[in-house]
Image (cartoon, rainbow, N blue to C red):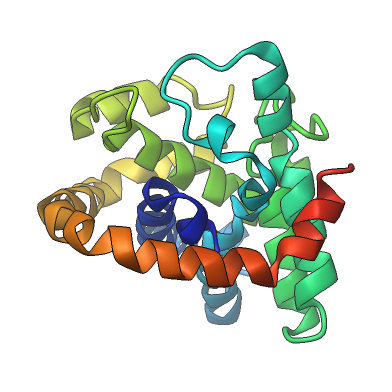
Amino acid sequence: LVEAKDTTTGHHIKRISAYVKLICEELKKIPRFQTYLTSENIERIVSAAPLHDLGKIAIPDAILCKTTVLTSDEFNLIKQHPLMGDQLIRDNMSSIEDAEYIRIARDVALHHHEWWNGNGYPDGLSGRNIPLCARIISTADVLDALLSKRPYKDGYTIDKTYEIISSLAGIQFDPDIIGILPKIKNEIEEIANDDVEKKHQIAENATITTKIRREDALLTFQKSALQVKNL
């Protein structure tokens, strides 16, 4: 659905799933995370990762795809997408997925913009009060944002990306998660580079396919998206 709204976001969520899998598998080697990071929960987190930006389907194209600096009002609207995503999952998926998956998916959608120091949104949670699944998604989200070329910026190198994200340990990100990133650096770089190599082929096929998906997907969630806009 989000890919149908915006192809850049669509490619982004595919890479995030791969990053999340790597982070989870490395993080579970730390004893205190082993109880939560079971094989079943890792599968749920990886599966829920593409839903983190689901609420963006309720954000107008003119804002979501804007290539210049957002106004305050536009940014405040963008900041509503975690709430919108949470509501879309609650209203449309509860009857088709198990309760634990829904809990993780809602945590991911609602809390992936929370900061370790409490300066994030929408709830201003801090530290371990932020669900672990959301802390993992948050890290993967920014990793990809830094590594990827966007309409408004070029992608950073893997070394520059690690320098930036490491400087935010204990500020924006869980220090334990940042601590394991060097161990999976080569794999992260492979995923990022593989996507770059494929992007021209993807672009050739994206225009027609996206128009079809977009019409079908947005019609499916039209009623819910209109409702969450009123939050």
